[in-house]
Image (cartoon, rainbow, N blue to C red; front, side):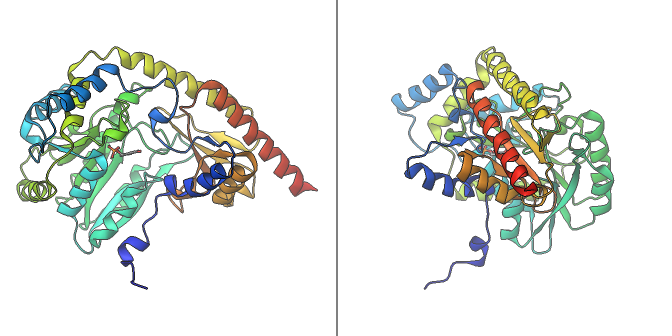
Amino acid sequence: MIPVSSRASTIEYAIRDVVVPATKLEAEGHEIIKLNIGDPIAYPGLPTPQHMVEAYRDGLASGNNGYSPSYGLPILRSAIAADETRKGWNCNVDDVYVCHGVTEALQIIFAATLEEGSKVLAPGPHYPPYMAYPQMYGATTIEYALKSDDGWCIDLDDIESKMDSDVRLLVLINPNNPTGNVAGRKEIQKLLSIAKKWPNCMIVADEIYDGLDFSGEHVSVASLSDEVPVFALNGVSKVYYAPGWRIGYMAIHDPTNVLIDVRDGIERLLRSRLCASTPAQLGYLAGLEGDRDWMDEHSSKVQSRRQLCLDRIANIEGLEVEAPGGAFYMFARLTDKYWSKNDKEFVLSLLHEEHVLVVHGSGFSPEKGVGHIRIVYLADESTLNAAFDRIDSFLTRHRLAKMS
Ligand SMILES: Cc1ncc(COP(=O)(O)O)c(C=O)c1O
């Protein structure tokens, strides 16, 4: 047997790992209600806007099928810079680098900033790549706590206690995946004042859900930083409902010009992987430049589905949730004693017995996510109701079995 690298053999991505048994059940003829994947296109009524699809198609038809410049089409970089500037900071076209989604931007940032022994401080629980990728560069991800009993807000004291000169990247996912928490101006200002004390520390501001803020509290991290360098991350996947296009960006806010060498490294890495998809960049451009009225209709659907889930969970014994302020996730607590320690078993048993697929909280942090499940609340109302009926009967049946 030819050995696999140790780097690859330890990578996990909980959100898709649970799909393997679900696919097997589907192959046996079962219909599965899937509330596991943060892809709005997988749910009815939330399509990619038509004008964006047309711009992508026109790009193909008019022969825009070649490589684009490595940092992105200038016209798209300029539209992104204008959009970031609207969020409150002076973003220039040269600050923007277009990638195959935020996921590639992250890989490039990690490759350009981390060394053996470096640390990444990321929220716990968090979106899994923040744990998986830094290891490839010899770095370690350390979790700072989100307060599970206080809307999953950031524990700033915990961040302060974990900062040291090895922390190169301090990550804020805002709104957060998987909890839906939205950090507001005051929390971000405090976070920046902590980071300021450590000159090698840069902030990764993953704002891919910023247009899905229902709290009214969201503010761009870059717009509040006058000293600490910030990588603002965003793209087409969530707010523009086109995750399959694989287009995102990093916009670098470097108020005191300390990232000249890091930028050079980022540019070298970007050139070495050629470019992001050219016609997909044209589709995103149409989204940024076009009318955004359509977003209200999509958002109101998302919010009414959010409310349905909150109402249902409030009436299910064995489930509790901190109401999320943004994104399209709920991180619900399993309150029955057994499940509170065995969330993965809960997910797999629920899948096999009731054919409902959610993700185990420990997949987002073995320590801080245990005893929770992540629910994507984008399905239509009747599907959500069916899923909650089944979750409710599953919890009741197992509670009775344990009592007898
Ligand atoms: C917090 C967060 N960042 C990034 C991504 C992926 O972004 P992209 O599709 O642009 O690679 C996701 C997808 O679920 C996410 O939840």
